Length: 128
Image (cartoon, rainbow, N blue to C red; front, side):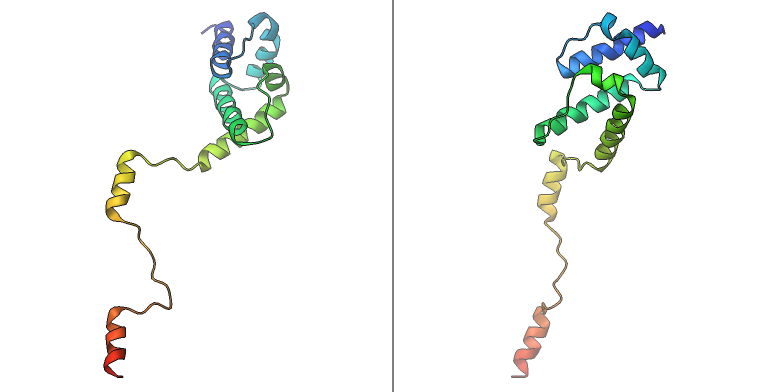
């Protein structure tokens, strides 16, 4: 695969996810350095999805501008690691099947320490 095609793939992923326009002649040198540092198209996708998800739920907004993302390699690396960690720890919503099974099975509870079973109650009543 031609390295130039790789840069085009990364830019097309960026534009499709972010909704922003990015022209290759402007970002070509920075993208080349970014790829040379070991980042990939999938890394860009992970970080962009993370930024969009975080921006929806936080007051602080991460920038989606391409220049700061690819020019500050350390910042991109930090965002990538944070995105991977949050994705690893993110609780996945249960599927429809899992929700129905949970309803049929009911919620399992541990008995409280001070709760007596019905047999103990009847024994106590018989002694009275």
